[in-house]
Length: 230
Image (cartoon, rainbow, N blue to C red; front, side, top):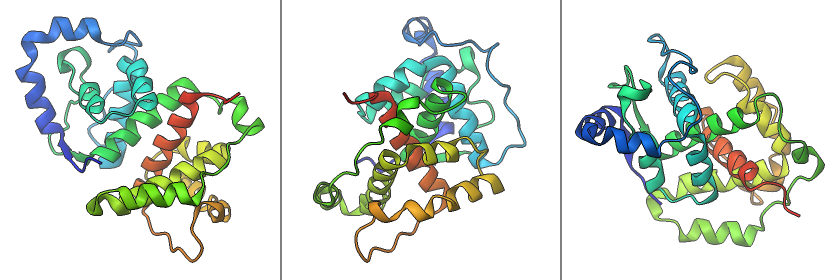
């Protein structure tokens, strides 16, 4: 697992360094929107809201590439998603002070893709055919095989993967709340009664709203991208 910190200041530097390649990169970009169809950057956003904006902005241009990542989650694809010419999109305006981890960026992009794909409600098959929880043996194996420094994050990811599978509609409600708001806290608190099947016996779960939401967003988006299993 990658434990990298991506600095938007670093992204800006890479964008400038690759400016000469703007035309070829533009040709490879998703045709999913333009800078005239996206929301404008707001300088008064807090860090979480800014990252949420960044995800929505990238999804305007690269929705199909985000889906490709969700179906085949190679970490290098995240770098490709976020290093396209800023002159085309202005997605990184004012981001010099923002630093986000790989998982937070992945969660932001996943959530943005999901809400862009399902803007009004979750796919109907979520309610009709929730998936079974992964076996505890499978989960334990993935946790044990994770690097020691990544293990705490992997525990949250496995919990989110399980919860998004067995309670996708409830997870969807969290993603439809603005980040860092009372509505978000209320929606997350309402998940608690359903946590049981996704926790090991005697396990004490501890996570903050930001990390849980990021993990849930990635898990639910990946679940939706794969589609209903026949």
